[in-house]
Image (cartoon, rainbow, N blue to C red; front, side, top):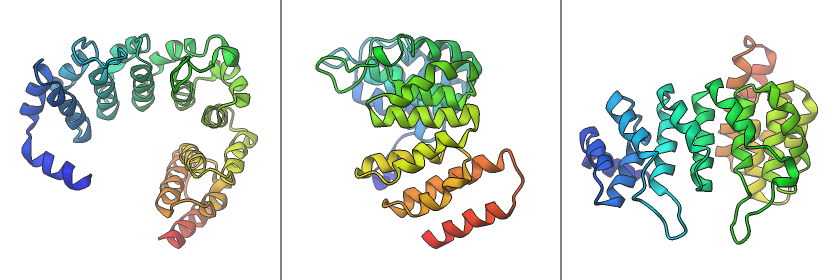
Length: 268
């Protein structure tokens, strides 16, 4: 994939990507243009404007009514970091397409703007009882995992009462998201320890998910468990790096910092 991306980068310019995104005939070219602008961090005003307009696209539709271009545009806007996209992305949380709502929640988490908190909280209305699968679809009524993770990252302490019940949700990744957010919002180790315990689970995919959730918080008590997880060293390094970076946002380097760095060295 890296080779394909490198080749693609040589075959398109910023101007071409924006022009492709704004035209309406070649849906593949539009979809790729949105991806390209996000991938290569093209964050100028014209690109942001074109991607924001794409959040309302009605042309690119899947047979079941999804909006692929909107999804890609939301993801790109999250990567570009321009808070001018916050209000349009909040509006996307009302979209009928589950995956647009999920992409919007993830983008709002990346943009870290507290204006998104009330609308994200409304996505948890009804609690765990309402968080059930959509008949015939591979997803729940809302992208709970993405919503809960965004609320945790945004420091939405008012959402604690809404998030805590999801610690008992039957879907593992939703439980992990709730544990991650509860630790971020309360700093109580018992919530981070839920993720540490998940590192010993039987399914590799779930261990990977727990690794990434631990990498999003600053609980250095998880460092040894991360390093010893039965998973790829590359993922363990990513998790330890995130753990350390989050820790250093709040505290100066100390003995624990060198302990984590030593664990990372051992994985290289």
